[in-house]
Image (cartoon, rainbow, N blue to C red; front, side, top):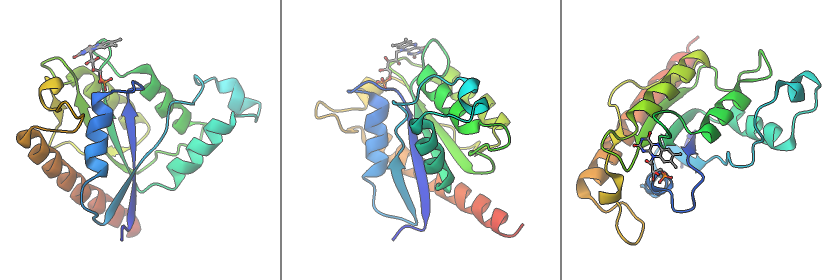
Length: 191
Ligand SMILES: Cc1cc2nc3c(=O)[nH]c(=O)nc-3n(C[C@H](O)[C@H](O)[C@H](O)COP(=O)(O)O)c2cc1C
């Protein structure tokens, strides 16, 4: 039975997304103290501060913010678009951070895994995302870093993670993230 709730946000909307397949691999791992679930960011309209200033946010914003409030930790698994964070994911960060003073990310442990079909494994997206996470005060694991390059070679024709090296890496990354998250959650509990 899981004690801690982790939301996975995927930075790609594509049906056959490789990043979604990596998220699926994480979801299928043996149950631990950490329970993972996907957080849907596809229905969030582009952030417009008027929604909040006028006290009339879209229902999808309210649902998303409530869901974030119920999480103990956040795992980002993202594609890279033009060496940066795909807009859909940046939009979700912005929606979760507002209205002013009600930042739903504040103080939660987080980690970033990026992957791409290119050789650099989404390094640019990974680090641009990290910059935003500093500002919204998500406490993001620094090591191990996770940049999965040439991702097409790691996924089999059935759409699952095929490469043993990638599977081993993903499991060790998940373990490290859980240790990191538990440390943060316990420290917060002692405040
Ligand atoms: C608009 C756009 C920009 C992209 N820019 C990059 C990039 O900067 N670096 C890179 O390695 N791949 C880039 N790609 C290729 C993506 O890595 C590739 O489409 C990958 O499959 C996206 O992740 P997904 O499979 O989870 O959707 C780009 C793809 C798109 C559609």
